[in-house]
Image (cartoon, rainbow, N blue to C red; front, side, top):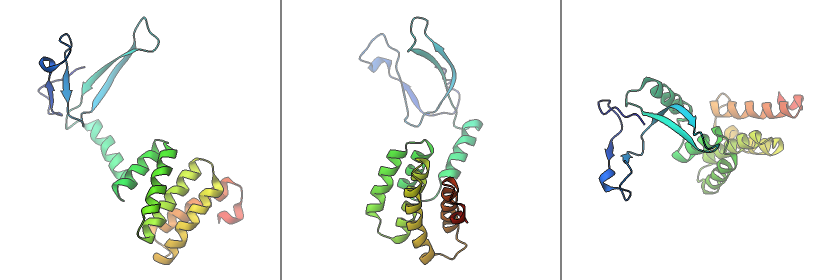
Length: 177
């Protein structure tokens, strides 16, 4: 692990003198520390153990900032729970995302929340190739959007687009229009 103490980075502390194991050099990092993987080597006598060379990134690391900005842009909006659900969908933890959105749907107090959660559940079912179930969720969302928004609202457009895409996947082209 390479740590340049002159680089403006996440706080860390040498806690070797606090360690239970006297022979270990231990460093404690703040929870939001980010490391760059420089190299991964397989240890010669093992097929399952690797040596990983890391470098602590600085607070002003340009590559990390680009990635962070992309994530923030892609995941902005909604509640923290919705953003977590979006992350779970993006990393294909679909069962966890579904569990989260079903829980949010049960707790929803406003119709517009229900519509959003149904839309996300439709996305999850689409990824799972459960197309008829996806359409069911999308249509529930669309029903609320039609009562709530004008026809040119972005959420309604996204739901209509997804319904069309699902019908295209199941080759029901006349319904896709």
